[in-house]
Length: 284
Image (tube, rainbow, N blue to C red; front, side, top):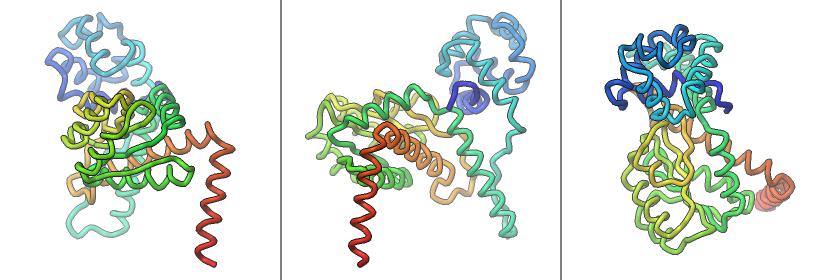
């Protein structure tokens, strides 16, 4: 989760949403990554037929501190083994091939999410969750699976956690929240209208809001105090239940849970022991 990788992944995701001059630079870097990391902002502007100012604007649009961070993160990507492209299944394909493709896609999703997840934002999110009086997880469709998974994990360590897919129930619960509570909105696209509206409502109540979306600006992330990002990789055409996005969301939930467990280690161990004992009691 260091800021030394993920540059190419972010560029691929953001390239089509950038202004024309910035898009030209992004496309040039994607086509010539090895060369680009050796250039100055002025040289890159000249090679891409733009300007050094456009290079700096691109870095800002990508959420980087400057051109140096962009080069470091692209260089980090180049040090890794060649990136495997996401692969879709074929008609009547052998099951062994499907096993390999799904496994490869999953591994790629996990690696890319780790590369683009901000450690600073993660720390802020964990701090807020650690002191929260209550936590509400919101997701619609496949994202509700991640929300429900988060609810059961955080309940096991004695957090006052709830998950909602029903907009009215979520709004009713948020209406009674305020400072000291946390609402987590989960949406791969970041444009799920219901999730964005619920986060907006939470902000009106001065509740801390956290978003889990793909990289880039979006309606959901714009209504959150803390943004966490998942793999920006494109879904394969035949995706069963939003395969890649679901895996990435569950990964971020697991990371949040484990970081919180580490921060509150003794209490977490005690609560997990008590929940295991409770389950054992039911099986006697």
